[in-house]
Length: 239
Ligand code: FPP
Image 1 (cartoon, protein in one colour):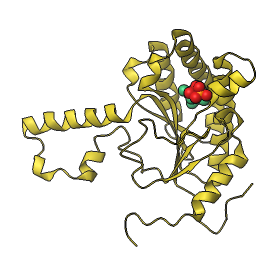
Image 2: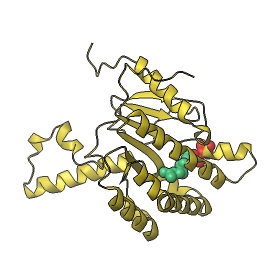
Image 3: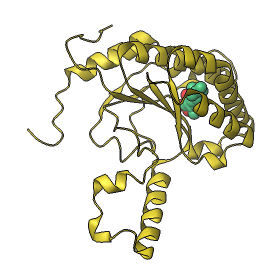
């Protein structure tokens, strides 16, 4: 598999649609939650590899606003897995100098998860290595509508003049206000769609789709995606 070229730039921000956990489990005759559990191992490997490769931001689509429609048992299993992961892995995050951030409609999460997230965010806030952004109960359309609503409220009170609104100002109202846009979007399991993920922010991201199912995604797959990114000629609409 191709490896990154040390003479070419590493993407500053990688976003990942982690897909294929269910199919990975089904292929082994296992319940879907086992696919998510195996997916958590890939998360750990990726975040260590990203830190070592010099990636600054890694955003993972862990639970979409549409995922609430899944069977209750799967939703509960995913929430429990996430809570365990954060609790158990906080020392590893500290050891690897990883700072945790979250985006999404967090108020919809069970209280226990919200508490755990707040604790880990607080504990890791001064780490200055990789920033791991976990998207939870996240939907890009909802995020954009939230931003528009806040802007309209500010326009009503006169705090902002609609004539002054531009893309930079609008970006500051999104959940990702403090983050640079992703340079590279990876989607696993071969599906070719963006599924309501960072629609505004991926305007100029390079997209790499791999057939590998997320639970099988390892450092070499990440490196191959970065190598493919390095072969792209980014023009941002220019020549
Ligand atoms: C999509 O696969 C994956 C998810 C909805 C959940 C992703 C969550 C994890 C990998 C758990 C660990 C995450 C963290 C941040 C600790 P799918 O279930 O839609 O797969 P399918 O398309 O094959 O059914």
